[in-house]
Length: 94
Image (cartoon, rainbow, N blue to C red; front, side, top):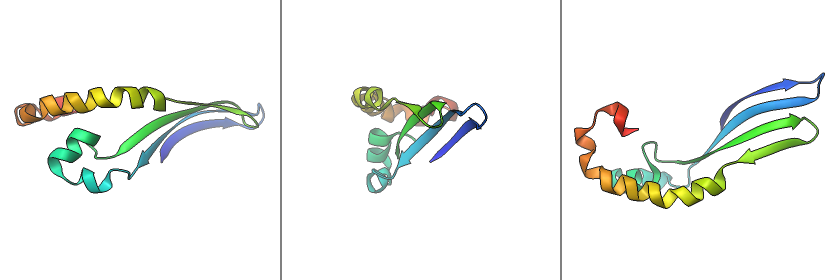
């Protein structure tokens, strides 16, 4: 988990972002072709959570639903582009 947040105790407020990573695909992520196709460059599953509002009752926003919907498209994209990765420079691979 990595993130950054600003907390103001006088105004009882918080605003920040957390990135949560999971080792869900740690074994499959080690297999070069399968790991890249399923999990991308870093071989892990991650999501971003945004916090804002009062410390006593913060609003938590997540993009898990969007990531679940786009996951099959990302897998398809990585499957189609995988044979051409050796021709791309490192910046385009991300």
